[in-house]
Amino acid sequence: MTTNRTPLIAGNWKMNGAETESVALARAVAEGAPGGCELLVCPPAVLIPPVAAVLKGSGVAVGGQDCHFAEGGAHTGDIAAAMLADVGCSHVILGHSERRADHGESDELVRSKTEAAHAAGLVAIVCVGETLAERDGGETLARISSQIEGSLPAAATAENTVIAYEPVWAIGTGRTASPADVEEVHTHIRGDIERRFGAGVAGGIRILYGGSMKPSNAVELLAINGVDGGLIGGASLKAEEFLTIARSCS
Image 1 (cartoon, helix red, strand yellow):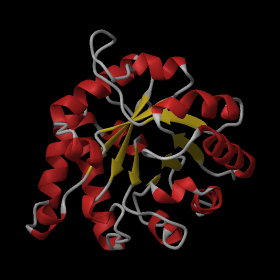
Image 2 (tube, helix red, strand yellow):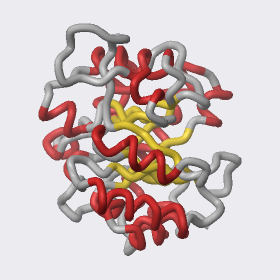
Image 3 (cartoon, helix red, strand yellow):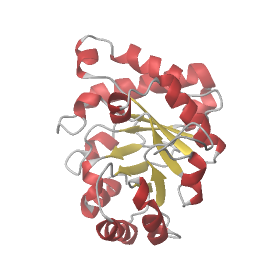
């Protein structure tokens, strides 16, 4: 990654952890954080306050895993973007494949949530990716373009938005796309962004790889042209694995 874009290694803890172990994990990440990249952890919502308290001033950022598109109101069980900001979050993951699949989230809904995140001062990590059927059907690039067009609002910039490419078939399966496949999609995404937002945004926006990155493949994946970091799932739940991935940025 020989660019002026600082790599971002983001940990998506998903629905895992209790307070004691999560605080210990956050503390270990902060104590071992290497230079050369930005680190972000995204705990379950109920664990954000204690994790944010431990990480305050450490340089390791905290994010949410989702937010609602409304500022507030009668939305039982949901969390507003401003609430995340209020408890110490600087980022929020939106449109993750598990949200799109399990909750039926559309590109239009993801766009609305991204607009809400921007309004609250959060950096939105907008996820895009194809299923195995779409890849086997030769629909990968068309599907990615459709998600980019539908999920990103007009006000997206390199400062308020990060893109995460997550081939759905490679999440939690131990499979990863080939380096050539990853480079093709990341190059395609950057081209879509340039056509819509201009060369300035396209040159600055970070595109993460989110398909089962782990210590054993991080060096190879992070060396691919156009890969600006990783959205890490299972490997983010163990401090040393997460930190090994982060060290692979240098």
